[in-house]
Length: 95
Image (cartoon, rainbow, N blue to C red):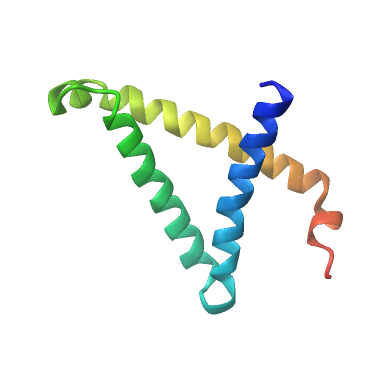
């Protein structure tokens, strides 16, 4: 990913994180993350559907689509967990 693309990627991710964070003052974190994941899964289902010409075609590729998104999420989560482990004191320091 080139620098401009990476900058846009991070900016979009940060916008989603900021929206989720804005709900934390009046909601339990578990509820916020559940909504965040549901929204992401709903959007990914829609994005996937736009690449097919029929429900039958989508059904035929369902397992491959699931494998793709689950593997991508796992890779991203592993990267971010490792980052938080490595930088725990810095990231979790009280303001």
